Image (cartoon, rainbow, N blue to C red; front, side, top):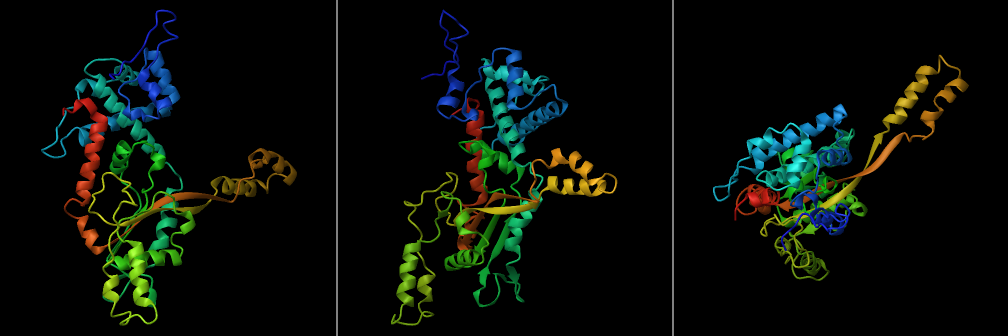
Length: 401
């Protein structure tokens, strides 16, 4: 059924005007970036929408932030989404009239009414909305400390031997590694692109801003890495996020059968002579473990999970209160000082703030790591699939079939 922006009844016109598009956000849970139009009728209504969205243009700091989002939205469209990613794709040109807007309410009104700029205004607003979410996702005064506490756990367990080879751990239980990559922050372009193709378009649902990638020589070594992580509490199994684990690397039940058959007492041959059987574990069929990411190649194999780590950081409110109390204690009597600081102390701030932060771990063998460098499973092709999805979602009818 073709979307119609409004239904008007002859009696009480204003009362019975409906925006079918925006009602879908409330009733069907449709993401705002999947709507085809807004439903704002006047400049004042558009201004109030901006205020309640979070940008009061009468407040200088919010005025500046809103225009910064606008300019970045224009730049992202021009640089990332409008050009054709390959010769097989279609390029589109951003209209100059859209770039020369001097009042942000104009974009909202253009997106609410018909005309050649309406789909472009909607496209720009989709990107601006996503950038706004991305901005708030990265604003944490403790982010550097979060990075350090999560990644340092892994760094201190990685060792290099005299031959330059990497190992997780030391001694007899050390596990060989081909490589380890620690991601301290997802790039801004990658974060925005991910949000643009995520169904819910919510920055709080991005779990891989911090990540650990471990590459092992064999699939069995990948399991040994997982065992090492568990036994050394690098990731606590109780804090693994349900529904975000994915194993396409090893058929665990088949591996277990082989392992138990060659390690039980009386098994023919020695465990060492049967080691080759363990090195060829079959891959899961995928039926019981469907891919979570539609942009991942069906040929790519890995173990992935998301863990929440408990972060502990000094509470700046508590520290400031203690410093203020110490500075004033020599000048003001204790009883008077206690009265002055009573309001500040009312909340009884804790000395240490404790909260969970998610990060992603990926474990794969050398063979599958090579697949990420070229071919269907390569990161470049993965990003191309993401980009095409985002272009279709943002530009919509501006791209001809």
